[in-house]
Length: 328
Image 1 (cartoon, one colour):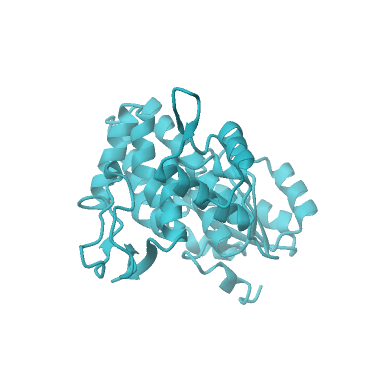
Image 2 (cartoon, rainbow, N blue to C red; image 1 turned 135 degrees about the vertical axis):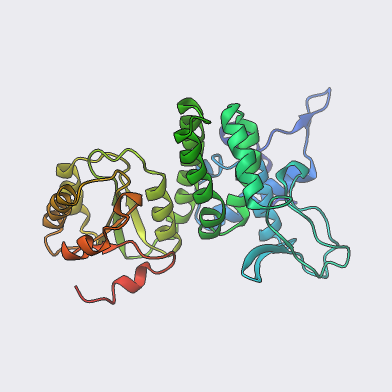
């Protein structure tokens, strides 16, 4: 039924917690239809080269969503520029995600796709996530974040949900409407989700290598994580070094990795003279061996200065490879 031996199913249950079957009074395991779907989904992902320990980072509803797409019960498509779930006409329509996920189902004819979105809008989902952050509700955050990250492309999930969410977090914190503790709580959960997604896409990386990091003093890494994930979906072999990386350590990494690109996120605002000094130091580290990409809200209005220093602005999603065709 699952393509897995009983011994392997028990091993995945014990080691990774992929399923938690009910038991009879005699101790026999009872597997639900959802348990079977999760196991089938896990098997398909492992066959694509993903380690079982990485699957343990996904929530159950994420694996169920993967199963719906992988088995043909649903597919992700684009309708009017929006990612949607579409169910083949030959399959009897059924609910793809759990009721609490906020995802719609198909009409009875099975021919009209319903957008993957909250009951009304992404904006409402952002509001619900902010409420979950404020009340430190882990389960609610998983319910609201898990399905979009499992079913939407990373680019769509970041653009439509995560970026608006992070902007609103910052604005509410600035107005005193969200505590520092709630901001840290939400940021930590988003960071974990993005890193789990990044590990999944790293399994199929190509020959192009890139180092991604935040320079000294830069503590905000979520924007960099989204950029790194975007690069990984395009086949880049990404080496993610995180926040507040000393320049000496960045140089050591460049010397060892020999990347084609180095991507850095700058969120903190700097005076033009300070920014010029930092970019000059970074360009010296690259020394013509690799190209320097910079991005982040701290560069607003500084595009000309960035170009004067010889660096490149981070491109729009999906356009990284085009940079290699540009002359140095």
